[in-house]
Figure 1 (cartoon, rainbow, N blue to C red):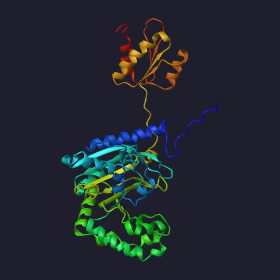
Figure 2: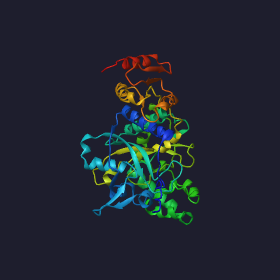
Figure 3: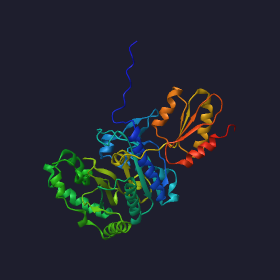
Figure 4: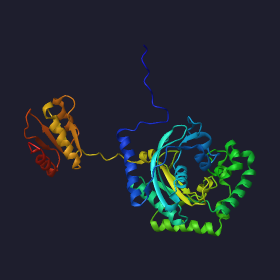
Length: 413
């Protein structure tokens, strides 16, 4: 019988281990700590949804919906999609689960998301995001709090140096309509010079041309009219309130008048935290206000604002993780003392002491294995009958060693 070929990891996925996993876990733990500081509730949503949840919320003309979603029919014939982002699923849950009664809601989550795209540095087909949303709050203060939370997260992670908050306004509905008409007129005048993708966007999504990376589009986009000329008084006042709030919160920002979100349900604030430390893929956290999203999903007009960040990208910016120092190593140097070692190890762990147990492998080599982990304290159990253990302190924590001696000093339980 021919030998079975070893299965390979699917392209665009990853196995996370060692220092890489510790950086990954550090990002998630820091996010959880900051989430609690800002009193955001943790929420969990399904990893897959009805395809229309994402098609209606992200937009049929976007690359995510047109090219990148993992969509499949289930056995009942329904079209399902693995989530490419969190906001749409949270908005759907807000409508279907009756969460409107709790508005305004501050929600946060994390987990895997899926997009079929070309794998590259810091970007995978299954990757992980952290996400924060405020639903039901129309005030600029909600935008400010979210941005302050994101800024503090980056500082707590130690990656804020070299990361810049770029900020823009997309105005209200009237502003967007007037600006959109001006952009269409501008791009129509240069139709013959636009790329194929931008020509396709011109009819349905002209704002997306502004962030085109195609060299043919860049000079045309650079000459396009700015939104400031079309801002209503209300929209201008909203943006001013956001910027003053950020200044009061001590959050540094810079204006990027070309920062856009193509879909019509986006309003007012749009933002990205960017860096040049990740090459061309420089965005580490991004978001904006989406006051029209829940209405597009069939609900009542409901304000919302949120952001998401890739865990892998943040982990790439994090330095070497601090090692988790082992406090106690318990070594059974013969088989007769193994049950005693298990009993005492359990007690130490219940006391909150990080303890490693060595009762596997060659008994003569267990002690050397324990020493290599550099614990603060090593307990060596020898002899067939109960004898006083050899407790050796390898660090300066003599109190820990004394406590362990007291615990093991009891011959019977």
